[in-house]
Image (cartoon, rainbow, N blue to C red; front, side):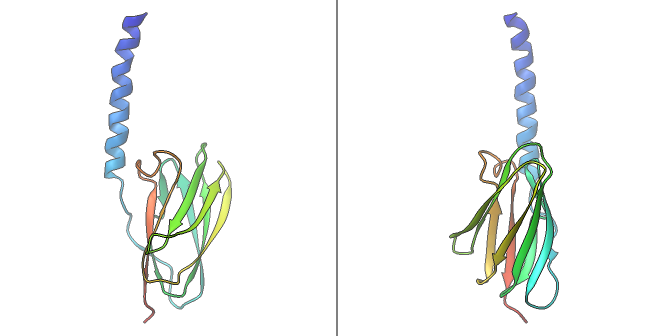
Length: 136
Protein backbone atom coordinates (compact mmCIF):
# COMPACT_ATOMS: atom_id res chain seq x y z
CA UNK A 1 0.00 0.00 0.00
CA UNK A 2 2.74 2.45 0.87
CA UNK A 3 4.34 2.08 -2.52
CA UNK A 4 1.13 3.07 -4.33
CA UNK A 5 0.71 6.18 -2.18
CA UNK A 6 4.29 7.14 -3.08
CA UNK A 7 3.58 6.68 -6.77
CA UNK A 8 0.61 9.03 -6.60
CA UNK A 9 2.34 11.67 -4.49
CA UNK A 10 4.49 12.75 -7.44
CA UNK A 11 1.29 13.28 -9.44
CA UNK A 12 -0.05 15.54 -6.72
CA UNK A 13 3.21 17.48 -6.66
CA UNK A 14 3.18 17.80 -10.46
CA UNK A 15 -0.42 19.03 -10.42
CA UNK A 16 0.47 21.58 -7.75
CA UNK A 17 3.43 22.78 -9.83
CA UNK A 18 1.23 23.15 -12.92
CA UNK A 19 -1.28 25.15 -10.86
CA UNK A 20 1.47 27.45 -9.57
CA UNK A 21 2.85 27.96 -13.08
CA UNK A 22 -0.61 28.77 -14.40
CA UNK A 23 -1.08 31.28 -11.58
CA UNK A 24 2.26 32.88 -12.39
CA UNK A 25 1.10 33.38 -15.96
CA UNK A 26 -2.21 34.86 -14.82
CA UNK A 27 -2.07 38.59 -14.93
CA UNK A 28 -4.08 41.61 -15.82
CA UNK A 29 -6.41 41.38 -18.78
CA UNK A 30 -6.81 44.14 -21.36
CA UNK A 31 -8.21 47.30 -19.75
CA UNK A 32 -11.99 47.69 -19.75
CA UNK A 33 -13.09 51.36 -19.85
CA UNK A 34 -16.34 52.12 -18.04
CA UNK A 35 -17.53 54.69 -20.55
CA UNK A 36 -17.64 58.48 -20.92
CA UNK A 37 -19.02 60.97 -18.44
CA UNK A 38 -18.84 60.93 -14.68
CA UNK A 39 -21.44 59.11 -12.61
CA UNK A 40 -22.61 55.64 -11.70
CA UNK A 41 -21.27 52.90 -13.93
CA UNK A 42 -22.23 49.24 -13.73
CA UNK A 43 -19.88 46.42 -14.64
CA UNK A 44 -20.75 42.73 -14.68
CA UNK A 45 -17.92 40.73 -13.16
CA UNK A 46 -17.38 37.04 -12.52
CA UNK A 47 -15.41 35.48 -9.71
CA UNK A 48 -14.40 32.04 -10.92
CA UNK A 49 -11.80 29.62 -9.69
CA UNK A 50 -8.95 32.00 -8.90
CA UNK A 51 -9.80 34.78 -11.35
CA UNK A 52 -11.90 37.94 -11.59
CA UNK A 53 -13.17 38.86 -15.06
CA UNK A 54 -12.68 41.65 -15.90
CA UNK A 55 -9.70 42.32 -13.66
CA UNK A 56 -8.41 45.54 -15.24
CA UNK A 57 -10.86 48.45 -15.23
CA UNK A 58 -10.36 52.10 -16.24
CA UNK A 59 -12.55 54.81 -14.70
CA UNK A 60 -12.57 58.52 -13.98
CA UNK A 61 -12.28 60.46 -10.76
CA UNK A 62 -15.78 60.98 -9.35
CA UNK A 63 -17.27 57.81 -10.86
CA UNK A 64 -19.13 55.37 -8.68
CA UNK A 65 -18.63 51.80 -9.83
CA UNK A 66 -21.28 49.20 -9.20
CA UNK A 67 -19.68 45.82 -9.69
CA UNK A 68 -22.21 43.02 -10.08
CA UNK A 69 -19.97 40.16 -9.02
CA UNK A 70 -21.23 36.64 -9.72
CA UNK A 71 -19.35 33.80 -8.06
CA UNK A 72 -19.45 31.08 -10.73
CA UNK A 73 -17.29 28.72 -8.70
CA UNK A 74 -18.46 26.00 -6.32
CA UNK A 75 -16.36 27.47 -3.52
CA UNK A 76 -16.64 30.70 -1.56
CA UNK A 77 -14.77 33.81 -2.61
CA UNK A 78 -14.44 37.38 -1.41
CA UNK A 79 -13.73 40.72 -3.01
CA UNK A 80 -11.70 43.19 -0.98
CA UNK A 81 -10.86 46.62 -2.39
CA UNK A 82 -8.02 48.92 -1.31
CA UNK A 83 -7.78 52.55 -2.43
CA UNK A 84 -4.60 54.07 -3.93
CA UNK A 85 -3.33 54.85 -0.41
CA UNK A 86 -3.79 51.16 0.51
CA UNK A 87 -6.73 51.73 2.85
CA UNK A 88 -9.41 49.05 2.75
CA UNK A 89 -12.54 50.46 1.12
CA UNK A 90 -14.70 47.35 1.43
CA UNK A 91 -14.73 43.59 1.77
CA UNK A 92 -17.68 41.50 0.57
CA UNK A 93 -18.30 37.76 0.94
CA UNK A 94 -19.25 36.02 -2.34
CA UNK A 95 -21.22 32.80 -1.74
CA UNK A 96 -20.94 30.09 -4.44
CA UNK A 97 -23.39 30.57 -7.32
CA UNK A 98 -24.64 33.96 -6.09
CA UNK A 99 -24.29 37.57 -7.23
CA UNK A 100 -23.46 40.51 -4.97
CA UNK A 101 -23.47 44.21 -5.82
CA UNK A 102 -20.34 46.04 -4.75
CA UNK A 103 -20.47 49.85 -4.84
CA UNK A 104 -17.20 51.80 -4.93
CA UNK A 105 -16.96 55.60 -4.88
CA UNK A 106 -13.80 56.53 -6.77
CA UNK A 107 -12.66 59.67 -4.98
CA UNK A 108 -8.87 59.33 -5.51
CA UNK A 109 -6.80 59.11 -8.68
CA UNK A 110 -4.46 56.17 -8.96
CA UNK A 111 -4.89 52.39 -8.68
CA UNK A 112 -7.51 50.71 -6.58
CA UNK A 113 -6.45 47.13 -5.97
CA UNK A 114 -8.96 44.31 -5.49
CA UNK A 115 -8.38 40.71 -4.54
CA UNK A 116 -9.90 37.62 -2.95
CA UNK A 117 -9.01 37.42 0.73
CA UNK A 118 -9.54 33.63 0.99
CA UNK A 119 -6.23 31.89 1.73
CA UNK A 120 -4.00 31.51 -1.36
CA UNK A 121 -6.64 32.79 -3.84
CA UNK A 122 -4.82 36.08 -4.46
CA UNK A 123 -1.54 34.21 -4.94
CA UNK A 124 -3.26 31.97 -7.50
CA UNK A 125 -4.30 34.97 -9.62
CA UNK A 126 -7.48 36.28 -8.04
CA UNK A 127 -6.73 40.01 -8.11
CA UNK A 128 -7.21 43.07 -10.26
CA UNK A 129 -7.11 46.83 -10.45
CA UNK A 130 -9.22 49.86 -11.17
CA UNK A 131 -7.15 52.69 -12.64
CA UNK A 132 -8.71 56.07 -11.90
CA UNK A 133 -7.67 59.15 -13.87
CA UNK A 134 -8.76 62.78 -13.60
CA UNK A 135 -11.77 63.67 -15.77
CA UNK A 136 -10.92 65.46 -19.00
